Length: 113
Length: 119
Image (cartoon, rainbow over all chains, first blue to last red):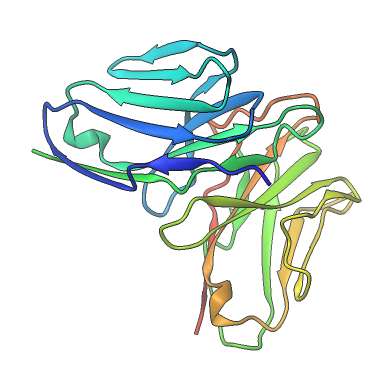
């Protein structure tokens, strides 16, 4: 059974601070995806990383996939209240099961103005 | 340009009743995945279906839960004799074929979910 450990579970910071969320596993994944979910809505994809060591940037968000494709991180620079939400990482094993994803338990981020 | 459509958005059932959750995939998509999200937890894979076939149901509880994706019509997740522990958000996602990675973005390959409450 593949597991993804996401940390921290809760994060409460002030506007303008930086933060990093981690996603770790003992298993290798063919892809790692990060989502953001608002209350009462479905997850919305932020980014997909597929290559070990890959780094992707999306405005103030930086995503990294570990060299061994077992871990990933999400770094937010100068957080804003609009960044508040649930962040989920999810690993895919590829093959014929692209849609079968293993999700971390999520990080609830609160950014205070 | 409709995305994955789930209904109802909210469903309240008494213990012992049946719950039916529907998912209409994006047009042209023939692969459907169901996930369950318990309060303050991540999403857990339940079942993967293609038209008229269950491909992988390794995440489905052995009893009371069933899923189908008929040739015509939406995919149905059915929960018989619901209990309070079934209260959760149930999400559906779709893809055009097995070789395509699911891309879930604001234009939606992921449904908005059905919130089931068992009272």
